[in-house]
Image (cartoon, rainbow, N blue to C red; front, side):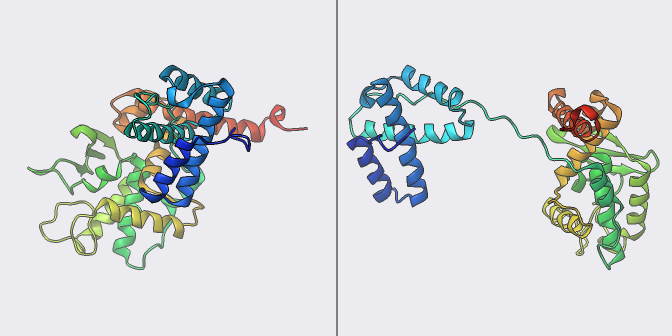
Length: 312
């Protein structure tokens, strides 16, 4: 469905011509609209329904059938509904129908994709990597950035918002004495994040050289070559380049390191509440997505190692 026997009504043909001439849609987009209207015509032909008299409950039943029997994905159903809704809107303007039976219909919600996390070995490979810059100042800075993103699970906005130390106007800063970062997260919520031994070493190495780059009055912890606060876009660029230099097989972005921090910590500890606090999630349901990543990891271990998982 649709098939060669499905014939579009003159109204549908006129609508497609309107899209081609008036809207100037691309051939590929027109083909998608034609397919969507073909499906609509096939459903009407099957059930003996006159499309100009289609009722909302009939359209709702067809939507459910397409989702259940033909297993169309929510995104595909959304495209169909968009095309159908536009068609009936045009029919209304042409005074061929008195109501739009597609109004109010919504496709089922698409499942949210699981966040992508690095394998433990890849994350460690990136964190241990040295030699990305000939300039030792930039090398120390970028290594420290990786440590805080992966070792502390910071968001990139939290990272670039860190100041060198607490001061009157500071909203977020690092405290080497207490081995903590005071972070300003989403919703202006502050939390304390512990700094591990590797992060402290990387911080001290960067702080020893930071003064050679930073402007005299600059409070930002991380600065660029011009001595001003580093931006989130700059961090994304340098992280992508560093991951390539380290030989990682995938594109790495800052939030991937945060996902990796959470997933690896949960695999090791199993403490969902603790991970929630470290990530600064207001709702534990946000953190629970990492239990699915953890299950995927365990499933892979099982498939690779358990005798009963191996195909004969």
